[in-house]
Image (cartoon, rainbow, N blue to C red; front, top):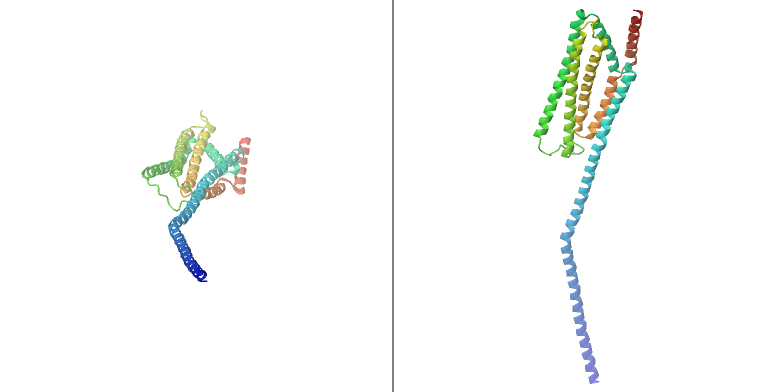
Length: 299
């Protein structure tokens, strides 16, 4: 019994010490695991925060790129649409002048000028001074427009050559690249140069028409020959004036494609109102032309 008791006592003491050592070992392992998890969290926290900030920055960059692409597409769509609208209107105006001139102001004015030319050339000695003064008014108007066009072209050239910064205004909503900005100024400059050349040609043909109108009707120069020079002068005058109209829409393109398209629509509406005749003036001119033709046939 003594041996059994002593063995049991030693077994219990050994088991107690083993359990204590096992508990200490487990506690240490758990503590190390907790510390390692905390260390890992502390180590991952500084890296996780920049990752979240980088994700937000990438989202902002993507939104900015999408906005820039939308602005580029606006210039690619709205500007050609505005130019196409103006070109379509002027093509319609051209065919209307050819087919039905009494419907347009340009056609009616051409017929009135032909009648005025015949009246001036019927008595060149008495009406020569009046004819020259009338043509001089047209020449002065064309000269003023030509001077304005070449002055604006020179100012634009000086501005483009002096501008070196790439900063753009916040008012511009559209493509803000330097290439598109150069295209805008070049198109505006080309429009003013075209207006200058057309007005110079208008001065040329009006001056030539003044010499032809001073000739008597019985001479080698016929009223149709003088009317041809007068019509060409009026045509170049109209083209120079149209170039100024188009330059206004191109100037608004500097502030973005949306103002350019809106101004093109408004410009076409205003030009339609100015280029077409109403029913009453049309009937008056048609009746006056008919009466004149009847008088010629009786004579």
